[in-house]
Image 1 (cartoon, one colour):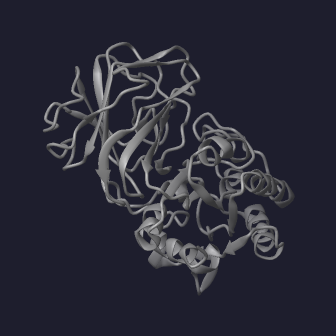
Image 2 (tube, rainbow, N blue to C red):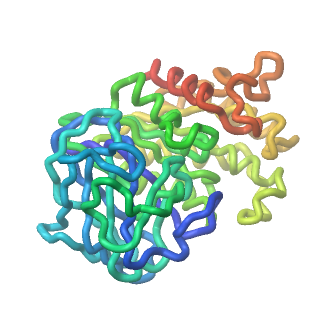
Length: 376
């Protein structure tokens, strides 16, 4: 039984928050990407997305291997991937591809390196903007390069790769769904300190991260992905092995209208609590139709941030009261209360504040994971 052990939600090519190659794409290059799997197994397969491609994508070769350090891989662990028995695959515009299973023993929490070679122009690349993990690229066909010496460029986005599935014999994966708070903004890069990583460590269960920085529950954005109510099926429910969904979303819907610092989402609509509640109900219905348990999370405190203002304060309090008291979720985790400053509950506790009064740091993400773990 294959269970999803790692995910990244696909996004349209865009400038994003940090420099990336999504608009330019790749040509006669190899791309090496490292991910941390959250389930153990003896076989695995990878999923690739060309959801936002305008022309067919040719992948001339692909490998997986256990990660050593940087772009290097563990000697003896490298395996070539096949797609319906072939070493190469052409993915149609708007389509996806899944590799054939390959034997490779992985432990939960171990890092896997996936290498893709492009011998033809890819065009703009479907990607995940904020990986908080270094990825590498180098000229030519380097899919079987063990040392990693030929990978001389890097950035912190994932391209085309959207899932790793492990033959784990279990179906108890937890999916975290939301925005940059789930994606891991504020966590230490290359350290796997997102709250999805912390939750996997403290529960021993597979955990999927379906966060997108800047994502909104109710509206689409060029940089920040499709609205949450539309992308839930693709980014969570269609993945094998998911039995629990944790929703932490809505802060951007409330806060973008308070800030002038979001040029890609301006003017932002002024959203009321009732609209967000309707969105949450849509997520709940979709998940329950697939037999998935749904945990609702209160919005974290964000007083003092660029998202804060009189209207945002009012709506966030109304939304959090509904999440706590409506009885429409299978369970509720009060992350606002867990991370609030006792001296000012509308603000993040200083010990948990990344520094922008909006995102937690590593310690804050660990607290979030511990709070959810009590409900699993």
